[in-house]
Image (cartoon, rainbow, N blue to C red; front, side):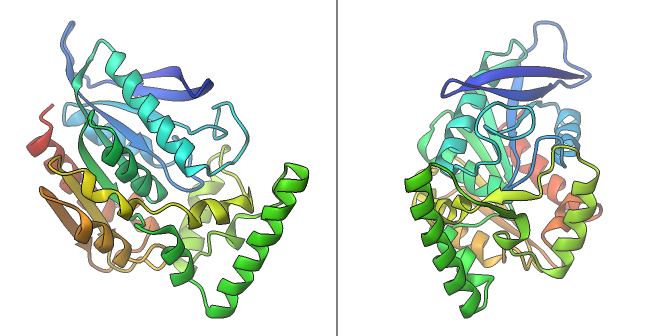
Length: 294
């Protein structure tokens, strides 16, 4: 039961999908979960699989595209991490307005950069009752430096400075191939290319302003504010795109109740395919059932 929906964040119309459990009775209200995609993802890439599992577990689920992504309005292909935080908060409000959802029982789930986003949202928004983050980073600057050689890092900073000055003088950021900023390992490059090739909304170029925006986004600075609401973090043990140490850093700074799961031998994009996907969703549904019953 999938319904196309739209709502507004900071005055910009966002495109979404509402997924309803098959066994939902007329007039019944269930707990709801907002699903959040990653760096250059879109709502139709991977998240419908998560929604199907959570529907089977009894939850009302909302997916959506951030401003400028998919069919959502706004400046195209922006990262805008703090604007994404506002989008998730708007999605939380919208889900709570649905007659099938109990607005006092809403959780959020984010994958990859979406993990960082939902951690930040949960820290500042008390309406979020339960949070799950998968293969995400805790500190944008540390992550971007950690996956690069020293020469690559200093080259990245130089490019960022040049584009920062360009944006001030022209109002525009230069677009470059996605892989120049999101530096993929061999496994990630192959798996991501395969998945993105089948999705018409996937983008191949992104603006260089992504660099400055990521360098300034550090959810581990606020993760301790989530407690005493529950937080589950799931890392991929062989993740060479966002190393599992990033989830560990979030976990170490979080309060109770908290849980960290590391999937051994799993790469970043493997969490979206079986058998790792099944492991992710077993942990996710168990966490939501424990702390946010449907």
